[in-house]
Figure 1 (spheres, rainbow, N blue to C red):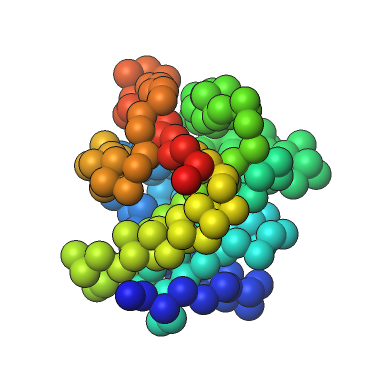
Figure 2 (spheres, rainbow, N blue to C red):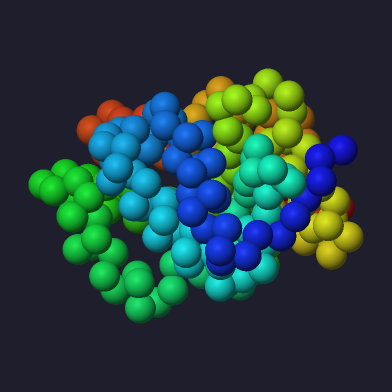
Amino acid sequence: MATVVKSNLSDAPMVTNVISEAFAADPTWCWAIPDLHSRRKYWELLIKNAFRYPYVLRTLNFEAVSVWIPPNCTEIAPEEEEGLPEFVESLVGERSTEVLELLKMFDDNHPNSEPHYYLTLLGTRNKSRGHGLGMKLLNESLKKIDAEKMPVYLESSNPINNERYESVGFVAVNSFQAPGEGPIVTGMWRDSR
């Protein structure tokens, strides 16, 4: 079993490092923000906002991290949300319209029918891949969520991960395609247990 630790704000750079490394070849995020440095800035924004809640988790030595948004909470603070169009434009320039359209698809497809935990990011460092640490971190989190009898939602931005999520009880509930025949994102739901 992986030792799961709650991260604190001082861990933000390491959490960002893990997510940046884990998503370096992700088809959706490479399409959306091709430049690695710019993509890291986007992860920094999401992770900084996630630290408003006590649900940024990691394995003991940062082999894997997960970023959760609790029920009835927002991924990005309202004051940050207002500046999102300008922020995205600073990252991708004239492609910002397409990227903002993709981000709107994430929002539009996110189920709002009942309170749930939202797994916004889950990643494993390259040197730790293949040992099941990301899934162990996910399973430890799901045990705690199951104890609360809450459902979970996530978006799989890389189809090769869908089977992994299905193995722990997630089912595909929607899918959408990035503008201009871009990559497919699969929304996945796991009922409360």
